[in-house]
Image (cartoon, rainbow, N blue to C red):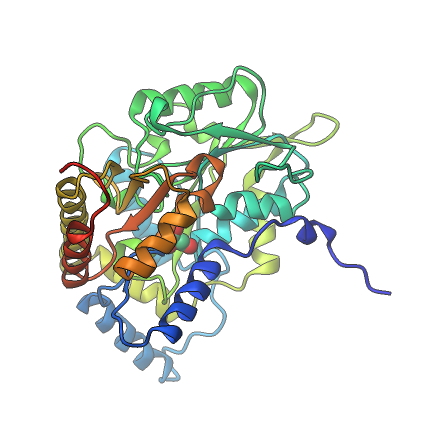
Length: 413
Ligand code: MLT
């Protein structure tokens, strides 16, 4: 008799974005005549930049030639890409990271989930709402305890993020071990400023905790004085792991490329309280379970650090930022209350008549033919909110705002 990992039976719903895709497919099948605009999952819609495409072509030619063929690469990623990341993402901001501390991977979703392989049973703190992968992977790892009636798990420490705290998690006045932070935040679009991040780093230093810092949306920061990396904060190299992605930066959602920074100065403990460095553990995990991102994809990712590539990426980001502006303007004109969309591609919309998030999802889908993401799918504190993304095309974004403005939400404009 084969036993399953019963932790999986403890998961409460289907994966959020699969559920939305299913509902959308069903609606379109029933109403083939309507044009549905998808502003749900944060998936890139701009094509890959030309420099990236050229690097792909060049890479294919190399693989076709005996003299330049590449088989297995280093599991941690090719030095050419790790060096460029260090130079452009960290040294350019005065952060001293060693290329060996960079691990190239196929996505931050995978890394934020896989990282749990190297940790034992810990007290885990997660913002609520948050990217569903954080909670779900802790459930799979057996860290979450029993599901409670309000859609949470008994053993997870939830850090409520709501209007009253500007959607920024408050530091607990008790001990936790692992802390997930995401800034710019998915789903609320909020950011952590320098002081807030310093408070978290100081807490982690004091409590011997580790921060899992998801900075997948870093490129969308426009305001001054907001850290782009947690390692801008003194002491963070001793307490944080940072997750970064090329997905939302250069359109790699389908192509897959990301990186995780695991500082060599980061330690945890075994059950006898011996100090255990984290870097060798993650390296061991990476080498055993992962065979590296393909040479082609890493060549393509490296192209975004050329002068032309940088310029192209900037234009892609500007395009999505323009969409965010269109959405903010449109929602304002419609009289809807919303947050985010300034340093983030996500706009967090409050239900106008106290509807639940899924009621709002249905209303948007059925009456406006717009797909968004129900806030409650990110956690109970997301209830009553609805997330729109700036990753659509400008034309679709404009059309969506027209539909929203023409709809009677029963509000004074
Ligand atoms: C989102 O919409 O939250 C993201 O696209 C999901 C992801 O990056 O996996």
